Image (spheres, rainbow, N blue to C red):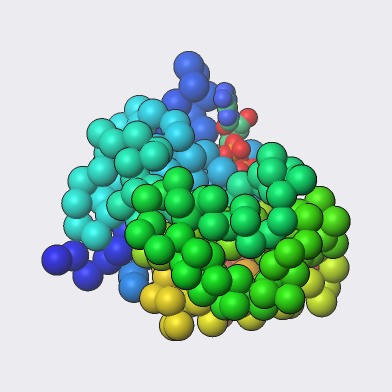
Length: 239
Ligand SMILES: Nc1ncnc2c1ncn2[C@@H]1O[C@H](COP(=O)(O)OP(=O)(O)OP(=O)(O)O)[C@@H](O)[C@H]1O
């Protein structure tokens, strides 16, 4: 058994001459949060797409729990515990919150989808909203519902692409608190692409910095923050 729940090895995604990602390796330990940062167009979302199986690899491999999943599609990877969140709550906008989460668990093949939905809703403090129609939720609650849908079936790895976008400072803080709690209470490991530096440096165990499809720095938040290359490439004088 691998010590890493997730490993990307020399991953490259090229679109014709555009090297969106070019030789990226990264790991995710059990219960770890790894923040991915970098300027616009650096390749962060493409890495997420490559790991989930949404985009075909030009080169490299992806391992989940030590197993090579590079040849598997996105649905198969999800069934094996690799989950990502989408801004997709509007798809079932007319459905009450609990029903929506239960349906997602049922589609995943979870044996007791009702119990799974209840556990997820309780964990994310969404139980008081269980019977509310999704589109009547506030934006911050909708983002939490989005996270709830990603958590059905108890995934081991969660890939989040800008989960704080559009949230107020308080909503971001609440979501960050939930993410941190999930890593210990549910044993979930998180790969977090996020532009909110307070959140990234506040909750990540390790941070990886991208520039032009490559990793330019990686390590503990304090060290990364102090790295002159990082400050120059991304953080600027605000760091
Ligand atoms: N389908 C595609 N075809 C061609 N080029 C693409 C495609 N998808 C992404 N790219 C290019 O790959 C590069 C990386 O894009 P990506 O969206 O991964 O960056 P990002 O770091 O997530 O940026 P942002 O922070 O703005 O979301 C960019 O130059 C982008 O234009």
